[in-house]
Image 1 (cartoon, rainbow, N blue to C red):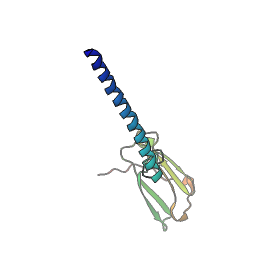
Image 2 (image 1 turned 30 degrees about the horizontal axis):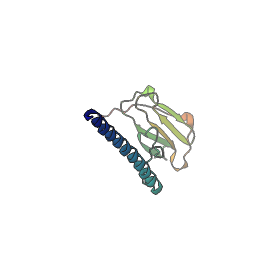
Image 3 (image 1 turned 60 degrees about the horizontal axis):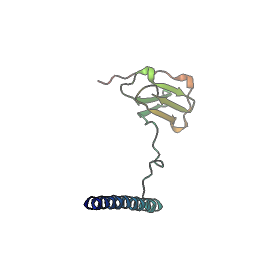
Image 4 (image 1 turned 120 degrees about the vertical axis):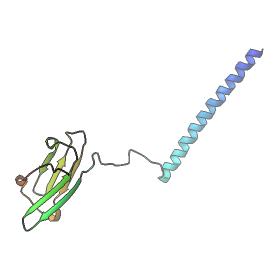
Length: 128
């Protein structure tokens, strides 16, 4: 009958689309494997990015005055949210308590050793 033929044509069209989709998927998998073998496929899991960025900083050393000064710029972050830890050879600053998260871990330049208890001040600097 006329209606049965239309259903058969519709079914064959659906089957045709299904086969094309399956073949396309197989072709995409094959292409992806070829690119991976050549090292041209981007793999986000292999891309290493620091968990938290470093803030901008500057180090000043005054040998004559025996002062080591770190100027670290973290804008609009309250002083209470800044965590500073010092050892005799390293400094660690983070703002993990705040929404803007920065982490800075550095060794002192030129092998300088400082007293960890000698942390003089942490103060906000007003920019005018």
